[in-house]
Length: 382
Ligand code: MG
Image (cartoon, rainbow, N blue to C red):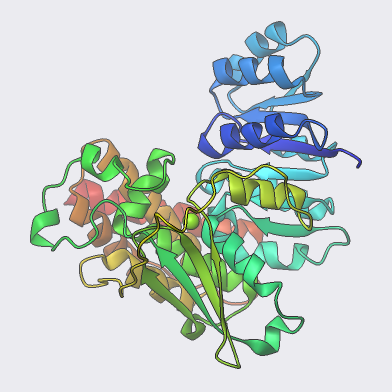
């Protein structure tokens, strides 16, 4: 077996460190050739000393000299997208819209993109889609739900014709079952206490508002080419069924496993093969029940807002995602109440002007900036 050369953009975060766990477990299969961070250089230096990548990227210019001094064996670059050059698979685990250049460069270079940075596909779908047909380019999602759908779709040879519905499961987050009144004054700590998944703060807050699921609906639309009418969300608190695909004959395929992100990471790294390391096995004797319920979109408004932006298409998802980033930052900083995250996003969307004609990278960047501006304006003038 030849080794797969792996580069990780965003190696210090939750997905980045779990990717290195997967690599560490199967050193004969995977080799780390590049690691990149925005500014967490202590973590980067420790990782690089263990995995010895040829290239490390540090976005923060002030910290680059320290990294170069600590890692004499590696070339230090500023642009995380330069990690693509030597890699067979690039894991894009950059947080937020800043991950777009890594997505664009990986696909343009005809490499496999293991995409954990869902924002780059959601916000820049119209720019990313054409690059997927670059020879050699491949997009494998590192998101448990989309990894599940990707696996379920392997049971048909005509996905464009035979898929009738995609059902994304949602754990419901820490506030599942709560009423709007009960959620008026929840704290940052409560919102960060996710029942099943351990993730970074931004995505954990998104999970508490169901914006994460809303963004995943848009992500599913972009990844699998299904219409919004064919994408449903169901709340499933056990997080064992990671998503499902229903086919035209009424048959539903589901992917089940314990909730551990190293499974979708390993799937994306090894695809079309499978890694030999199980990150947990289902104990059927212990798993007494699996529950499913419709989401409460009146209380969790963000899910409904994402459908609105997704159906609007064009630059609306970019605008939505940007406004959400600003609102979540304000909540994390203690400047916004939890229910007002959705309120700020909803009011921001009123300011979105749909782009006409072909959408370029610059149009997406402009829509992202406009979304941030609109949300900041609302925050400042409340
Ligand atoms: Mg997910």
